[in-house]
Image (cartoon, rainbow, N blue to C red; front, side, top):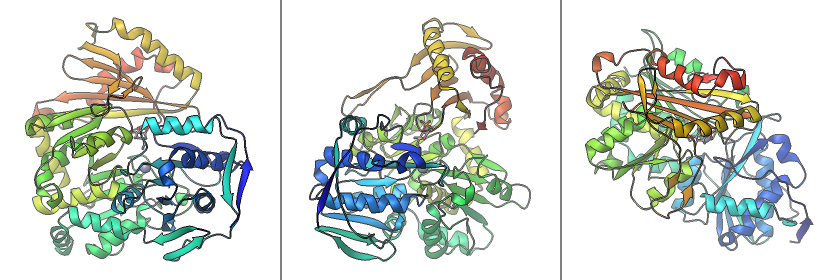
Length: 544
Ligand code: G1P
Ligand code: ZN
């Protein structure tokens, strides 16, 4: 099979963000755009030559086209074998699972996560390393550098591979193996959680739940695990068929975009348990009846109860949370006497800690929770963890969380997103805060006295690498915090994220509405950052 070497010129916008390269579909459809990025992966990840690559995506528009292009390029670049998920589907955590299980040299995941899909929406690509996790910055920087100098790529001419039939075929020397996208992942889940106990919970007949797959990638995984292996009634998984445009929805499991599920769990007739996952299956939202579990609390609750599950019965070695995530998990780590780490936003920063065995659980406020079982956050894993706890504890979601607050105190927490704001205005706002930072410590702002104010920098305890400019932290003497940062995943304008946290030890004050409890601090943050004056926005677009 003849390898064609195609001349190309660099695109200047191929720097991977928080989680890979994300752009509008039309950007990826430009001649050579995808090819340049993929060739940069093959040029820099030399172990793929003669090695095995995992390939799959969240099923969004352009997924299948991109997979065919990548297969033809893999053949031209001397990759020995590619494991492709059937139908081109692999959830992000399943891809991580397969990279690890079959000890491959890495994987390419096609996804823009929770961003909408369709011809006018978003597409994305990211490379995961042989440990199964997102490429660390050393790799993404090398990749980006390569994209800036690229002058040719390699590809073979071939008919499309049938992605729907499980089995092997060849593209020249390359073996393309279409694999069951679900089985390996489902087996891993069965090894971690008490499937018998969960099966009994479903069999007893009183427990009612729905899992909203949001027409994204987790549908087939959830149907297999919840309905087939665990015996939940058919129809437990809703919106379970992956669609190229996610049914026109926004596959982001939060109170705004998964509001239909919120309604199903509301009121006296509400479900006992509601859960949802995002476009590529790594995020999760957990709801009880009339009760929303803040992702930061979810991490803390899972950590405190881990020994109730078979996979974590010996306890956990440590916990890590991203910097904007609430400090609820820190309190659990302290009580357990295990280490706790504060890392920059993005799952890639957990990889070294997981590899070194320093942490078992980790999470982000952005609906991401996970453990050392893979190297990605894992939506269904979190849902199964909760189901395991519900099955063992025989308590409602709300009761489990309230009991947790009584023991550890409550970290009231919210995130406000200002989306699609003018990029220059967003930069101006951040610069203004940078200038303000040194003068803040010691200042009294309303009822709050500033203890520290900085631009978060992280030194990786394993390899010593430094990540600077990871967001502005303003900490108060009572443990409350204001955090501000700009999103690294958006594809249009800038998104400002404002995170607010306040600790409440007194259990008589644990049932206040979150926005009300945090109102004074929110006001302080808005004024300090001059949000309205600089962005023209009086209200955030999304509150979680
Ligand atoms: C967002 C989340 C972050 C998460 C990332 C990928 O990134 O805030 O926690 O790791 O998506 O899912 P951001 O847009 O804030 O850069
Ligand atoms: Zn995702």
